[in-house]
Image (cartoon, rainbow, N blue to C red):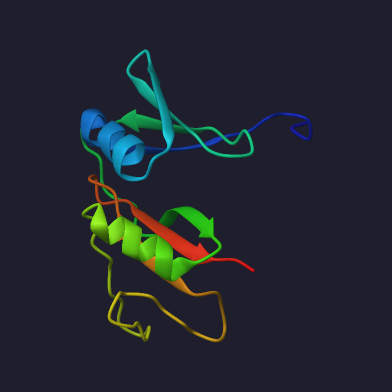
Length: 124
């Protein structure tokens, strides 16, 4: 039934203007707005819908993963743009907040202004 449908994901925020600034200016994504909704234009034609929700509650899981060639470089650049990285109990993380667990790729987590969790991870 949905095999040929171009599905897309979406998530809520409590402040659309703050989300537009963060995803557009801080992360450098192409962002458009139409009818009170944001669209994040992700590489590979994978648009993501961002919608305002007055009773928004931040996701307790990672909503967006950004694969990069060099996680150290990405973390340094994001930190320079004011992004703060999260620390989690049970994960050994270096001074920058990067987990180098041998069971997965090097990864660091951060939140958007609405408290939703995002991650930057190194891919080979």
